[in-house]
Image 1 (cartoon, rainbow, N blue to C red):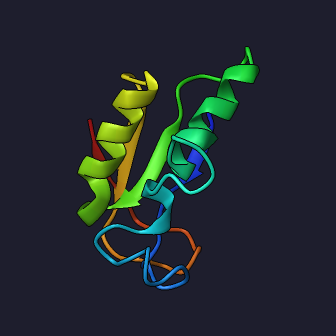
Image 2: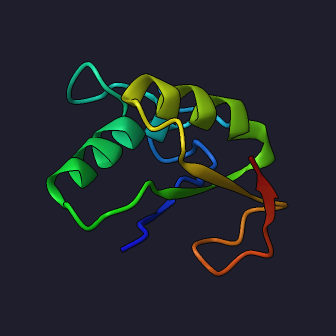
Length: 96
């Protein structure tokens, strides 16, 4: 199983904490870890799960890479979407 994590967001729904440059998925809201990191940690319970593929926009690629590294997922892949699609499929380019 290859988990795909959609990590997009415009930072408007949890304002003023969440902003366009630093949306809610990168904030530690309910624990010491961000929501993205909490999602990645839940994958550890599945033996058949490979490292995830995280889909994000280009503005957040370094946040995602850093948070994946902090979680210990050095082999996770990041797919960049060129623009937000409101939860619809995106035409990605791959960052490794």
